[in-house]
Length: 336
Image (tube, rainbow, N blue to C red; front, side):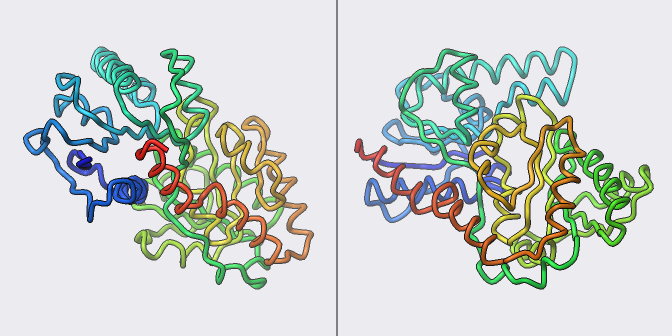
């Protein structure tokens, strides 16, 4: 089978690159090809190609709706119609949400194999469209391997906090700053660093709440080394469908570097996967005081870095195991 990755401009970015490569490697393994080419136009598609597609825009604007016999694999990264409705308003938003919803239904009906970033996302489409097929694989978003060298005792001696990522509304940066302000009252020596490309916006958000923190940008190749300097990492989210079905790469990056993640339990699959871990801090999104209680409890302990490494290793051996997903996808593509 001839596989090709079909992308539009800027679709292969830091957030999607590793996920695409996992699917490509599985396709290579299943068909014995030397490589899977990437194309950017419908003109480069042949009727016997099997496409790897990652956005509804590619489905809509490359004419896949008018190619009913075209084989394709599809990666559902999230709920695009709901994201549009949340971020925008008016007729434009309504029309775009409708179009992307139509594309979703077409994809669920026609795709040979579907990748969901969470089981919660699969259940969302079962409820929304009645999707009940078994042509799917659950694979969370991740782009880092665990770095064993990060787990040393000295980095857990001080209450250093970090937030890494963009400042999109549903990522709750303002709430993160407010929570840190409360932590600072209880732990005066606590520090916060925000790692983001949107530095001006971050400084503005800090100033509005009167919170002092370091703000800087670190390129993705250097992120793991930077994160290894911190003890705790924030990942707060609003209680909404966009977050319920997501599996943000941020927690993968934190844990890969030995950072203790702090997240609200609205992220459905994370709540399930990490529920038995001691060195993961989670709570109801309406109860930030519980987060502070957990942090204070950890601060009273002498942390054994080998114990944290052991807990996180179990997650990377199963939930974030790249080789496992490559094999599973290849077996699916081969009809195994």
